[in-house]
Image 1 (cartoon, rainbow, N blue to C red):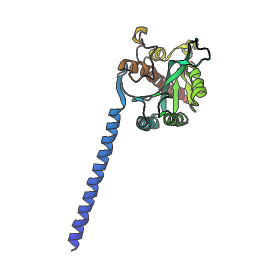
Image 2: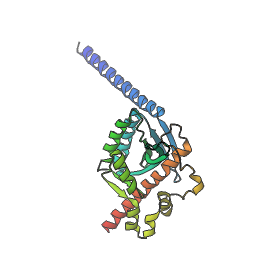
Image 3: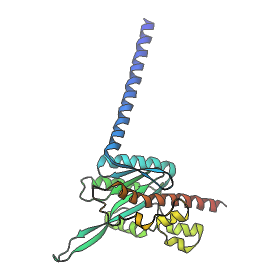
Image 4: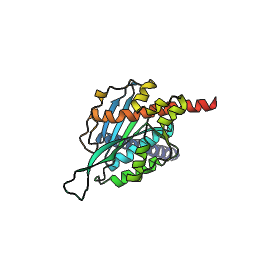
Length: 251
């Protein structure tokens, strides 16, 4: 009888282990299926790194993307920050006037292995949810957000969307502080990345998408690469300069 109970209990334990394994496998499959349904791209960077890039548009994309970005940031503490603008018609009482407004349409965040592109589309039914998630992420003081010449963009995000970054480092100021040479403060992200020899600067003709409609659902791979490059450059620059600054203080 005792041996029967032992075998019976052992069988139940084995069944529980198998069921748990099946549940975990199903969860993993669901996550992978979610990734497939997103607007995902694997974008090769000039330094040889392949960047998993997600263009966020719906609620499930937002939640999963934030979780993964938080995971990266928890390890690295540095996130590259950038924006893209679109031109939108603006209401005017003068019916004959054609008023165009420049708005921030895309917020871009990059870590060492992924880039998340958040479209600030007020017509999207998930816009409020995305804005809350993005606001919570940007307010996290444990993460250092880094960008190149982004002061005006920060003010516009605050005024237009109520978004504010709690821990932001302006790299055009930091590079002058760490390396000297005021002219470095006038460089854009790609120029600065080239100067620091992260990757070669792209020729002007390789960035022909200056008037992209970033809220359009038909963005192609080349346009996504255009959006990602500056943000990844900001991440690389910020990572190096923050490390150099720490070394400088210690010595």
